[in-house]
Structures are given as C-alpha cells and as structure tokens.
Image 1: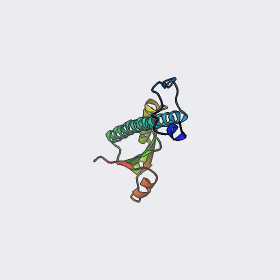
Image 2: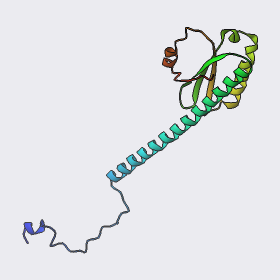
Image 3: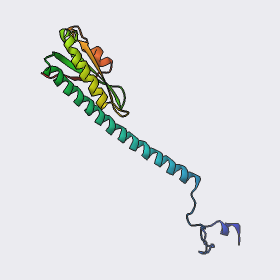
Length: 157
C-alpha cells in the first residue's frame, strides 16, 4: 500500500472503530462554552429579578407618597407637589413641598410623627423610603430638582 492509499477518504479503514468512552468526557472548549452559557443565563435571570424588584419597590414608594399627601391634605395642610427619587433598587427619597406657614407651624409636627411611624413600618433591608419636607417657594427651580434625581413628581388637585 502506498502513502496515498492511507491518506485517501478512509476506504481502507474498517467499521470496527469504537469511541471509548462514548461521551463520558467533555473537551475544554465544551466546558468553557457551557460555563459561558450558564453565566449569561444567570446574568439575564438576575437582571430580570432586579428589574421586577425595582418596579415593585417603586410602586410601593409611590403608593406611600400618595397616601401621605392625602394625609397631609386631610389634616388641613397645603401641599403643592411631591417628588420621588430612586437612589438604588431598594432606596428612595421623597420630598413634600408644603406651604411655608404649615411647614413652620407646630401643628405640622404631627406629620413628622406620622412619617416616622410609616418609615418604622415599611423600611426594611429590601425597601427604604426617606421622607423630606420643604417649605414652598415660588422660586423653586424644578429643573434643578430633576437634576438632583427627583424624576417623578406627584401633584393632585
């Protein structure tokens, strides 16, 4: 037999060849590929979970702000707008823009106390809302408020 005969299309090889073990092993490339696929799948799953948690926490923060606005109004205080900022997935800041007269009145301390009770009830390792009250001014630059991250505003007439 010549060299050419050995390197042809395998016509001289018998069908008795068996791969042992059939697939009880993985190549380095297969292991790396499986790792990368698993890593990407986990990253996508984590992203989905984090987005769902952010959405749930945002809705909770918005609901608390709406309820506190109603509470402030029901006590006879004047509130103009409220603003909400997302600091991260679990931390939020809310600003309540109230009239100067109400802000400086002793009676407004009741709102501070209620806010404190709300925070004690809802704040946890997975949700935290900070409540800030500010006296209203006609010179408030809302663009600056937005630049500070308070991209949500709530105003109910």
